[in-house]
Image 1 (cartoon, rainbow over the protein chains, first blue to last red):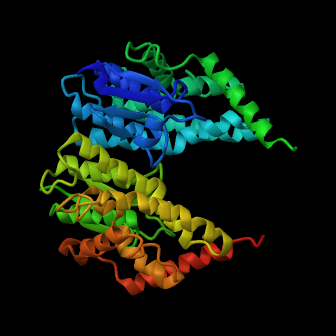
Image 2 (image 1 turned 120 degrees about the vertical axis):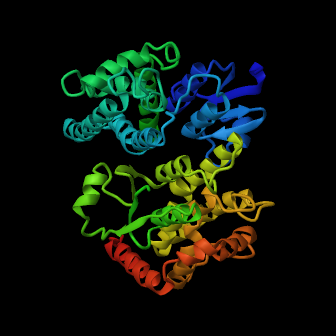
Length: 231
Length: 223
């Protein structure tokens, strides 16, 4: 496929964009990346995703596909010669989809909340819920990996990409909040998996460096405070 | 011989879409009705993460989350496909199904469980969401084309509950002039035999949802 056939509208700090980049890398798809600014969205983005006006948007042969999980499934269904992203067994697929929805709808919103929470007590409460979620994900990892290195088994799969794309922000929030969420004691499987995932060749260079994300979080926080400051 | 069990409530939009998927594909299944104020041990064991219905159990394997369940049904029983074959059209169908769950249904619910200023502010949000999906019906009888598919059964709760909401609140969000395609679709959808046969009784729905609205309004703290 020619490079111009595939375009990804994205933003470097977005884990949702990162997961599409990882999937594209896994499938060895050549693509053009267009960086979008949150406060100055391009005409193309607004036209391609009028409903949500958000990244990521994949444009393939001039047709837009939106929503990161839907894009990843689309890539899997179109580029069938590359390694499969979703498992082939229907029950394994359902399990992967279930945990993907859990991570997106329940777990990540808590992580975002922790990023902006101040006060030791409030932070402790949210990190407790996050850790409970991680225990569930550790159990899911043991069940899905079947003794191998990834949620997808021997190779990186759907749930690896979905959950793994949050590892950048996970490490950044650990640094910002001054606490550890994933550790060898309680979640040894996930701790080892996280290392393995981040050093995978389809992932290297996609997930932003922790310090870069920490800096960005500080800038966003400062901006929010300035906006809500009494005048 | 496969064994399929569906744990659900009799009225939930999330449960109905599973009933419709199973019925359309002609799958034999057993229904176990759950009382959400008194959840069964079995349900809590099957869905410890969310403790919710619907839950599908197929030959002892448990699947929860309604859209995950529908994809599982689609992957397992190939007759009467609910998703198109073309990957781009599949992505589009999945997009609208997700849009219903993330935006459309919650925005209409927000109109239903509020009153006064809060309700006034909720209406344009719901209307905008409705105008988005009205667009997708252009040139089609159903969201799935000539026959019903994933998006129809996901949004189908509207054909079932909008009339109930009108009766209780007096507000009609899907006006025939404003949303002619959606209005026509609701009628066409309700007329599909499989859908008609599984419609929960209107009067029972009015009683149940009136009580729900009342409980939301009485929980409101006057400002």
